[in-house]
Each structure stands twice: as C-alpha cells, then as structure tokens.
Length: 95
Image (tube, rainbow, N blue to C red; front, top):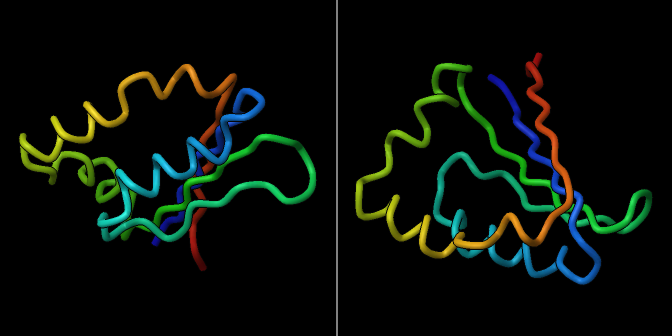
C-alpha cells in the first residue's frame, strides 16, 4: 500500500478556499483519506492525502472516472492554480 501527500503552498487568504474546493471535488473518491490545512509550521498549506494499493493503482485512479465525472471535476477546478504558489508530492510505502 502507498500513501500520497500532495502539498500546496497557497497564496495568502486562499488555503481554506482551496481545502474546501478539494473536499467538494474529491469528497466521494474512495482513495481520499484526508484534506488537511496547517495549524502550525509553514503558513497557507493544504495537504491532500490519498491511499492506494500500489503505484499502478495510483496511476489508474484518475482513469477510473467516467468522462462525465472528469468533465465536472475539471469545470469545478477551473482556476485553482491561481490559489497556490507552489506544491509538492510525496509518495510513501506503508509497512
């Protein structure tokens, strides 16, 4: 099993907006574990945590969406890149 953490460093005033957007868009996805926002440490961070059986399952997770689901997600996420300054992805093996 693997855990994927996508971390976004948001522009000031946008972390809660981005977290809410991710929750709305990804809330029904079975791989979603948590959507987190910072309380200490670096400011304006949002972390999306997902769990997958393998790297292959991670890669295929987005392919499993229907065309209609994909289009709805793209429409809702339109402009989300304007909410953050940088981001990173970490993939962890669960032991």
